[in-house]
Structures are given as structure tokens and as C-alpha cells.
Length: 453
Image 1 (cartoon, rainbow, N blue to C red):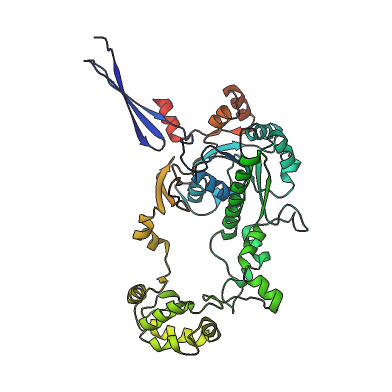
Image 2 (cartoon, rainbow, N blue to C red; image 1 turned 120 degrees about the horizontal axis):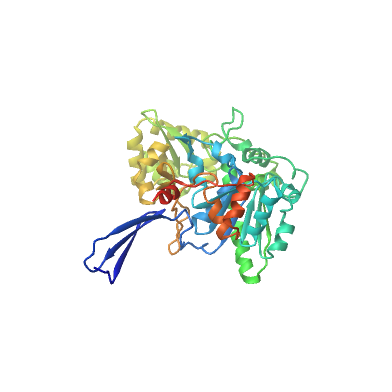
């Protein structure tokens, strides 16, 4: 019996696949279900940066972190890396042979693999640049110029192009050609000198802090440039350096040296000239950080301690006095915190409206209701692991929020699609370049399933 009408039922299986169910409306003997892979093409994003296309040539942390921010908020980000993969894939922990750091920092991106040391590989970059709004790079200054991919050359191809250049020491100056990682920038900036305990060598945070800070500044600069580009049609260059980004956090210490000759030093867990603002031991061997530098907050702390008179004592009544007598005040607070277990301290201080907390571990975070309520732990699809949990999107926008729809995947996962759809290259051309080691193609799990079907 011929079928006069077919109902097509389309459902989203997950962030990477759709299911198409074909059903006849009349009596018929067939019903077919197809699952089609979407091959990680960027979705029709609703984020505030949707419609913008970003080419990420950066590597390791600062460049990819900058690109990740764009991708979180809807931009189409094309990540270019060599066949062996970005160095960030070698950082952090791995699971079943997969880089967990890359799963997060390369999320929402189209992953393309090119040999930029070949002229044909660089020509592909030029073709992509014509179709992009922003280029992100963090090679050593001068490297792209040697390849004919500097800002002057690329802006001739695309006059409205915005180029984000991230480096250790900036694009000019005596240090510009020096190699630099985030921690090197911290050391030069003075930030490393004030990190840690005063009786020990300078310490550091156990994350690539300055790389991320620089990536954040770079993304902020690029968005400002996009606003200008929208008005004028003119692109520009963003010069973001690791040492300057770290140095910007030294803000209170700059005028203090200029006017007073004061050289800030390490202060351990306390914040100098902000008292009390320190880490204290609890009675059960844990620790709690208490911040009560404002007069009203300190009064509430004194009352919670059962020592309300401290709020009117001449040594502690005002913020300046508390800082001058910080050691004595910290001793009084420490004697109190050591008399109570951590849980009771937290309860008393929260009830009193005093900012205080235990020091969270990652295990604490995964079990914390607030992190869950704020969507700060996101379970997203992964090509081979099924799913992986990554940090949530920051900041929260009420009308155009960012989102994470896929994690980072295999090197070259999207090479064929991007070069075909955006660079306008034929399959034969892509295959030829692949055989010559100029491009690298890697089909993901879903594409292979679709081809088998």
C-alpha cells in the first residue's frame, strides 16, 4: 500500500547527535530510525558572541584559555594545533589516554590540525583569516612575521581583523624576545615575591594562574576591539603580556613604594593592612579563614567570640589600629578558634554575618550544594569517555548566558569539515594535503558510527 504522507520525528539524542524517526501516517510496513552525527559543528549559539568567528593559533594555556572564553559565550572558535597536539594535552592528569585538561580548555572548539612550518599550511591559515573576526596567537614575538603571518600581513587580507598577541613580555621592549611562561611573568612582576610565607622562598599557586589572567585580559581587550570594529569597521592589535597582567595585581604596592619606599614582602596567609584577614586553626586540627576588617563586621566577630569589648578597645576599634596591632589581635582570635571544632566555628560565624570558611578541596567542591546550584560543575559529552565534568561558565549573564555543549576531543577532529566549509577546499585537496603531512584529519567516534550506519 503506497504511503501518502510520512511523519518525521526529530529528537536530540545528545549534544552531538540527532535521531530521525520516519513513520507513515497510513498503514504501512516500515518505520526507520536514523541517527545522524552532527560532527561537532558549532550549534546555533545564542551567546553574546554568536556570529563571531575566532581563529586560535595559540598554544599551552594563555592562548587556549582566551579562546575558551570566546567559545563559552557563543563564538565559533577554530583551534589550530600540530599533528602531535597542543602542549596543553601533556599537562595535568589523563584518563584512559585522554587529556582531562584539554577536555576542558579546548571545549566548544572546532579542532583543526595543520603544519604551520609548511607554506601550504600557512596558506590555509590565510584562507581562514579571510573568514574570521579575531586571531589569537601566543608565539614568541617575531615568529609569525617570519612565516608571513604577522598582523600587517594578515590585516591586508582582512582589514577589519582583530589580532590578539599574547607573549611573556610584550611585542616590544628589551625583554620582548625572551621566552616566558606565566610563572616567569609572575617572578618579573613582583607578584611571586609577595606569595608565600615570609620565612621561606617565594611560593606559587598550583595552577597556571598568570596564564589564565593574561588570557582573560586578552579576551577583554578583544571584545573592546570588536565594539570599536562594529562602529568603525577597523580592526586592531591587542598586545597582552604575562608579566604586565601579573603586575596589574600589584596595584596597592606601586604608590606605596613611590611615596614611602615600602617594599612589600610575603605575609603568609594574612593580608597586610587588612586586619583581621587570616587563617586560624580550629580545635579539631582543621583551619578556617576569617575576614572581618570592616568596623561593623569586626564588631559582629567580637560578639560571636563572646568578647564584645574588643570592638571598643582603643587597640582594635578602628581598622588602622587593628592593622598596627595585628599580631596581638590574631592571637586573641586564634585562642578562640582553637577552642571550637571547625563545623561549630562556621555555624557561629555564618549566623553572626562574618565572612569565614574552611579551605575547600576538590572533593569538598564536588559535594557542595552551592556549586551544583550555580552550575559550576558541568557534565558534558566527550568523544571517547562518554562524558567529562568541567568547570562552569563565568560570569553569569541573565539574557545571553554562555554554555558548554562539548568537551575538547581528538587532534584534527574537525579538520575536514572546517577546511571544506570555511576555507572552501575540496575533499581531494584536503586528502592530498593529508597525505603530504600538511593537514591531519581525525574522525571522531560519532562520525565513524554514522559511516558504519
